[in-house]
Image (cartoon, rainbow, N blue to C red; front, side, top):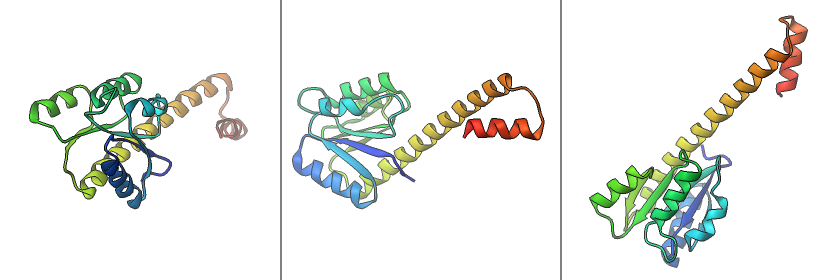
Length: 162
């Protein structure tokens, strides 16, 4: 499911970061972990093949600011926020700002893996749909430029699209 997709995991607590990273890797996910939000910023770009899991309270840039940056860069990139200081209003606010999910500490490894796998599946489908749309748009462009319906013309179009 997560073929070529990555989890960016931002957590300032070294023990929690190590535990979360290990749990995700043991479930077969590719993970890159960071102590600070600023370090993850260079990976967050439109079409990034993965998801972001971030602690809400971080030194420097907060998880909420990282969420806002991510949503501004690619609104379809799932962001899971994690906090030990959560409450219902905070979770609702995070979801309104575009978070995919909100997880409270302490959480189990299974909970972290489950929410990450669901977010990765959503991301995979989003990226796949964008790729299909792009191919269709390109195909329409080729059909407009290379006229004809003969088998040879159809083969030529397929060769160009491959």
